[in-house]
Image 1 (cartoon, rainbow, N blue to C red):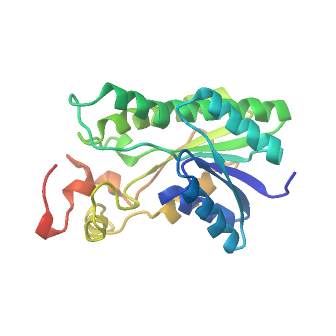
Image 2 (tube, one colour):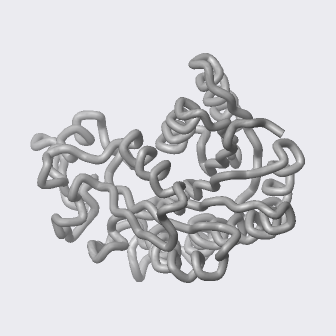
Length: 263
């Protein structure tokens, strides 16, 4: 068994998950990079961490498959003998609205954005209890769930809203084996059809501070929430984006002036 703490980060092959993995590896964790279909990107993340002196490995799991989720957590324990921290970061995200949404897409978003984190926590709980160990979970949600709803990304938001309102219930149910907390980030990286110029413009306009909370900022918050002092706690990490009420997602509302358009 490794002396390092083990963190499993779902959806860590690229984007914010990759940056979370690099942050934890730089803070002494061995990072397990979960991926669904992004095998090459996951290996690139592992290589990047190892190049910088950290430890990492990649594990595949279909988060829509309950059996695959159980096998993922069992594989972590088979390989490492423990799991210290689970970061439920993976999500699926696309533009749709109520009432014009696809039932198939709604079901898919629900499976990945809410059901999978619950099943991952359940499998982690059972393995940790069997091992006589304790651990921590941080669910990555979305600042909009904190009373800043708009009409965009309906299917994505349904699952995130359910997950975001389960922190205390999951913490109570998992006690005393697991501590469960949640981080609620805002805009972190370019999304959908944002150009880099759009993203930089939105980053200046979306918060009172005229800056956003970066993936590095959110990773630091996740690390904080993993400590024994926190349980059943919701932590909004968005540089104040939640304070600015919106009628549509900031990635559409704040375009560079020459191409600004409403969605």
